[in-house]
Length: 246
Ligand SMILES: N[C@@H](CCC(=O)N[C@@H](CS)C(=O)NCC(=O)O)C(=O)O
Image (cartoon, rainbow, N blue to C red; front, side, top):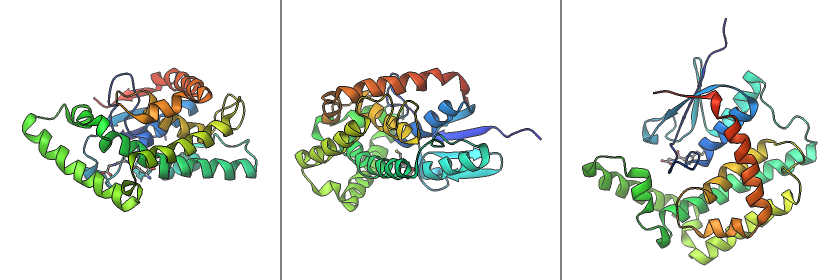
């Protein structure tokens, strides 16, 4: 029996020079590319119609796997993808802590910087909803903005000032920068899952055309800028294994 095709469902890029606007979608694409596993990409714009209301999700034959963390576990169990084989137990623990910081805190700061920061007023409207018919655009944008504001409020970040939020980001970015030091990748000479996760967020801070203080906070840390370029080259090298669903 032949191995089933992998189908990834995720958000599109906000602009042509960027990866998916969703760090979690970028993470799965990057992991598959580093692992050399061909996949078919399905661009989805309405996460409300997905199995758990979030992107990305993966179809592997008859199995549907939602949430990037479950997808990583599935790819390890079903396809033998494990970028962390050579990490020590201590490095695995450090990698886990870094990933949670990036995905559970920095992620929300990216969301804040795009949707709420007054510097970006209107940018999300154009970049995420610009392709919708004009009658629907305003309606869907206002509903998504309301949901995003509520999510940031409940998460807690939305209760702070912009200066406080970007000060949180600076500390998180400094932690990544110090962990990286002058090594090519976070845990040495080869990329691991933590690099995939860090790249997915850093590239989303540097590349898309949002006026965000986050870009400046990355740019003052030259090792992070060079690292994003290094990971970006690996990501691009794997582009040929992606096919489009259209
Ligand atoms: N823990 C999830 C987070 C996924 C997530 O937050 N996805 C966002 C896009 S970056 C999403 O689908 N948001 C749509 C919504 O909440 O309505 C994962 O790792 O996949």
